[in-house]
Amino acid sequence: MGTAFLTGATGFIGCHVAVVLLERGWRVKGLRRPGSTHPDLPDGIEWATGDLRDGDGIRRAMAGCDVVFHVAADYRLWARNPSEIYETNVTGTFHVLDAALANAVERVVYTSSVGALGLNADGRPANEDTPVGIHDMVGHYKRSKYLAERKAEGFLSRGLQVVTVHPSTPVGPGDHKPTPTGKIIVDFLNRRMPAYLDTGLNLVDVRDVAEGHLLALEKGRTGGKYILGNENLTLAQIFALLESISDVPAPRIRLPYRPIYHLARLCEGLSKVTGKEPLIPLEGVKMARRRMFFDSTRAVSELGFPQTPVETALRDAVAWFRDNGYA
Image (cartoon, rainbow, N blue to C red; front, side, top):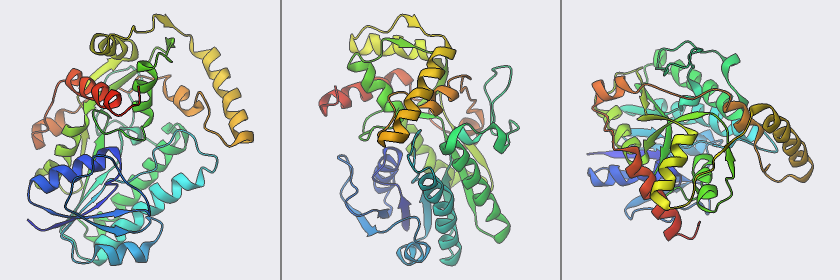
């Protein structure tokens, strides 16, 4: 095995990718910002301190690496300055891929998101080929990931071997920030979830997602896209699973969309004044209007992508949050 350059190793997915790479015998060179860390980071990572917005710094840090896993992203549903999200997700992606081309790396696995894919109007699970355009993107995070993916596609014609993976909604241990999805679990465990919206997500074990990154490197088609997902569940079904795992009662009240939308708008307006994250992110409420159901058949059939039961991932996430004082 050679040397893998990894961005986002201090994040939820990236930490698990680092673990799998080291287990498989790869030398791992991780890019991280000053002071950035993760409580579960394995030993053996060689660190380079840098920033995705610094193209020259990334090029120097990547020198001598054989493959690249670009996992890092600014995953927020609200930012006082949305340009920060685009600088990291769009400009940062260009810098990483441009550095990969300059350093003649063998292959790049780029971590996009199902948020950059299309959804079917009739509610059927979407796949990698479902039609999509920038007008379908709700909020700055999704829009930035859509634009970043177009940047990645542009490097294919320049000879860079890029494989794109689209994680759905990863859950499991190690969500230390936590992500917006992890925050739902934390709020549930702390009984701060008295009601729910009628929406749905595709859940997947974060450890399967990490494995999927290596499978994409080894078996993915250049220019190929792969949804790394598992089970489509409504929010009510997710809460029912969490209740059975944690013994915390699930909310029984289903809220209508319109009042929550207006409340989220008020929260958003207040956040613009205070600079604090809104209690109810408007982008999250807008996303909830449609169930984000996806079909991962291509990843399963072409890559051998594993399908660990979602209940196992949720059980391990609950245990990790409790063991680390989140609930």
